Length: 405
Image 1: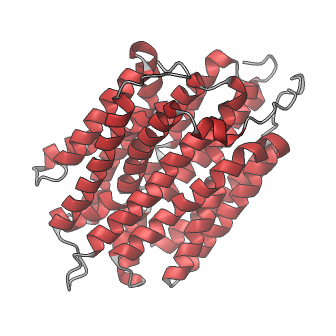
Image 2 (image 1 turned 135 degrees about the horizontal axis):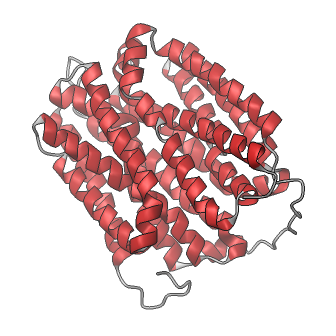
């Protein structure tokens, strides 16, 4: 920790953690409010899938230019400006009465939240020593991911009490306060830190031409993409339609998944440090695959809870792909490599969520629900993506240019 930085570095950590908490809440909230959106706005499953997934499409689109923009203009102004866009998106979403309105709101929220994690990683690298950087990043993701817990039972209660519109307008107010504090408190680096000279750009061609990058990126596509796609939308409707649960019971199961996901994020650094990133990623992806296959079966409540917990914990281990790409790429390319791997995780969420909506929507009933078989096909598609990515990642490379461990 930099000397004399105690008050500001801690406030920076708290504010970015708060912003990431809200980002996770927004990306996960539709799993609970989906029935209300479906009924009030007359949305189909395909509409729900598209409306939820555009958050991740917008988020992913921002990743490639984000690294250079943060380098040029600084975290304080770039992250704050983007977050004001998210505030506007939350307000638009809360006032919308059509598919186009909620789509617009979700797009703006996705754009606005795109700079939170990458901005935090960049500013932490300046305010924390290297040995503390990984710990603080893991804490931010672990604590911030509890936004998914708030988007479970607490959101179900709030939705029944005040409605989803009040929740999103209130979220805009809270996020606005966080942004104001970020603008006041955050500095890109301590005053006594010597500014580094810009590194010459080696371009995305070098990264995308590296086989090791594709192994890591596609695994993140499967782990991060499937986790966020299911947790952020279909984990709720799956319980409503297949098990005919009430909203509060659905919230409880989403809470189980959220707690397990948070535990996975918090444990990932320790597990990777003790048993190796590659080993834990292979083990995590294997458990993740079996949890997806297990969800295709009709189960008792306790078994279903275990499957939700295993899905959340093992999927969260995909966070280690960001740590692994930092290890295997040259230092001058770390920022671009990390945002590129993150692009695949978020882009995977968009594609998987959207495709799942098409698959599930094909089985619409007159009651506005969807058949268990449709969810089985969607889960089979997700499992297929995980299996292919796992095989490609684990397959030995004949030539290892980057020294992947």
